[in-house]
Image 1 (cartoon, rainbow, N blue to C red):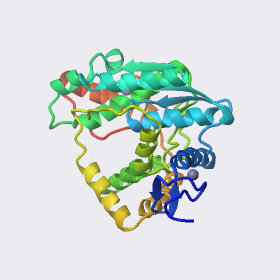
Image 2 (tube, helix red, strand yellow; image 1 turned 90 degrees about the vertical axis):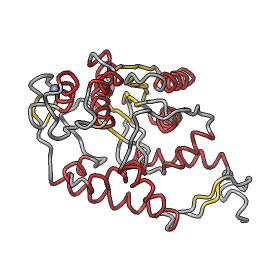
Image 3 (cartoon, protein in one colour; image 1 turned 135 degrees about the vertical axis):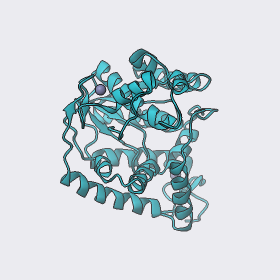
Image 4 (cartoon, rainbow, N blue to C red; image 1 turned 135 degrees about the horizontal axis):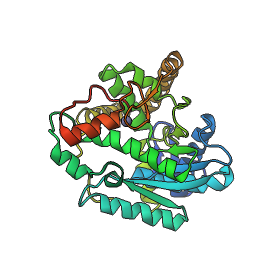
Length: 316
Ligand SMILES: [Zn+2]
Ligand SMILES: [Zn+2]
């Protein structure tokens, strides 16, 4: 078959998957992403028949794609979907992505719940960052702590069994490598897709963890999903973007390298998570699971409110 036609159906080619040598037309490319996601879900037992699945939808391309793909798999998989969105309160940025999330959830007929930092914590991210010394905590680490708890709250409100997030293969490998670079070996164990955290009433899964970031972006584009025009004004990724660039450079010289790194990360992750079971105790202030009796969210809230306590280490 000529290299200009789809290796599956013979239609005009659209994309060459360098790591496998496959040449794909638009339809077969889209179908391959759905099929890959279905296999990941099955391999790790991520979603089960009868599950109510909360899909964390920020409104960016990855999470919109996840909602679309899970929707196309949900009838055969026997699970129902709820879209969960967190409004951090970032003026001029968040409104657009929330509209995108609303638009897609409506189009697919998926119920959509939004929770806000303002409602949960009493302040939005704009205010929190305004009040806080940037040297004490980075905007992304503060936002990450608050966002995770906010998603948990939305999950509790809607009574889901499992939370699905749109982390892709690149995110997974980047996080693994950043944990190595920070010397944070325990956290590597938490990446294990098979870990069951009995401290929470719901599971957490990443159905896109075996899909390359660029292929998720291409899927979003092909599916006509709306594109967010602005980046978060507080985004400063530092080390993560250096790791991303490095991995992409490796991949372009050695196609398939990111797949290999994912496999290696997963086997290291599984060994560490078996060796270590998290022992959690309820936070004295809010009752949520924590490692020290004082959870990361409460520490961060105090930091915002009175600046007297610096968080020692991140809990979540
Ligand atoms: Zn084809
Ligand atoms: Zn707490």
